[in-house]
Image 1 (cartoon, rainbow, N blue to C red):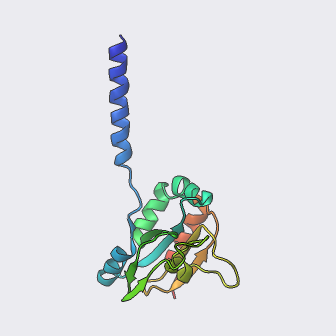
Image 2 (image 1 turned 60 degrees about the horizontal axis):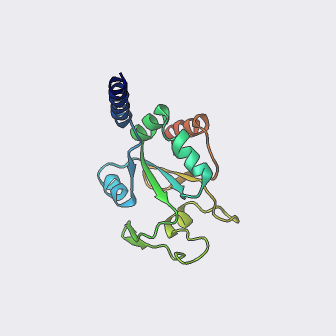
Image 3 (image 1 turned 90 degrees about the horizontal axis):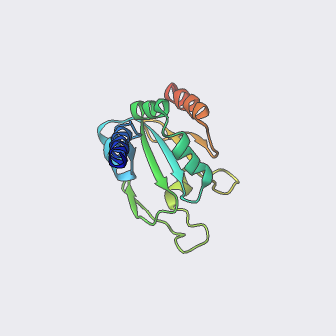
Length: 163
């Protein structure tokens, strides 16, 4: 009896694991992939700047970026980029080289988020979400946790924006 029970549990776990792997996900890109994609097919861009220690960022990854409506809208209408702001990588984008000049400092934020997601007269803060048009010009920036409903409304609004 015990071996049958264990076998049934094992089969159920494998089935659930397989089901979870088939769930749709946001097609996150890095900046080199983004540059190639924009060159072949211009499209709006959504960037999620996060850090591993940022609780609201992690909550959005778990509770918001896993929702089917968010996944559908981002994958359909945007190139989605996710970047850890403390990245030590050298990134080449648009014939420019970007580095993390603050690697050995207390707040080691990479150049790219500092350039793209800084607020006027305020320190850089997370989460930082940036929307760009097809010409890679920022149309909106958000520096707070957004729940699924809030983010979905913004995504749809930004997608319908006519400049």
